[in-house]
Image (cartoon, rainbow, N blue to C red; front, side):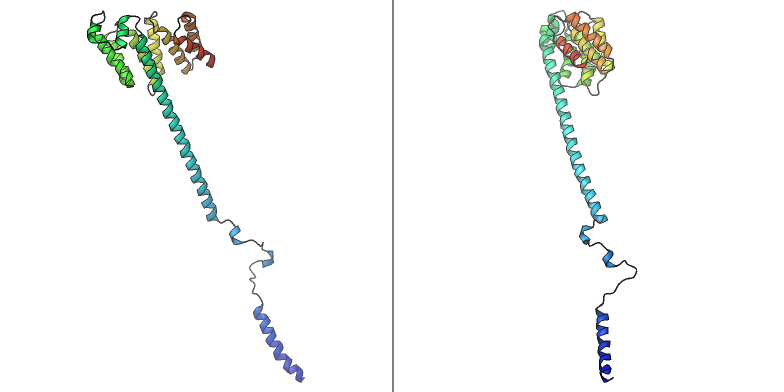
Length: 250
């Protein structure tokens, strides 16, 4: 009994120590042994997902801006090539003349008033045509169209009327936006009113292209074949272009 008397307090003290060291569990939560052993940093949070999506969007926006820059650069190069092509064409037209005679050649090469006035063409006609032609070289296409149309109102039967008609059609194709109906009307008028003019092969080729661009492929093929049949031995560049166009598109 004496021994038991001393053991009881010791047991009580030991029990209190063990109880103090025991972990405390929340009955509303599952036991710790049922939770996966995963670090908190490995679990993606909503904020981290939003940051990742934002980063991807910024990358896509940057790539889109780069693509737009490439498209704009290519558009600028295309416009430059278009203008250079027109410059070469103007220079060729200036050199070879397109009126079928010396008077037209003098007009396209910018001959002086005194020289032109000695021929059959009135100086006023020479000046009016030259003014419109200078607008073409300056790439002021809308103003040039108005200039040639004004020329045709003033000199409907003039020596350079066929040239003016042709240029109104040509300029309707190079201006922005182009006018296919107006171009077709101009080239058709030239072919109808001046079937023997030196600009006829060029007008036929351009009319074939206009028909094609307008969706009338049958009419395009027909007039280009007529051009080759009627002027195939003339050595005109329009014949070469027509054959290539037929080969590429039909």
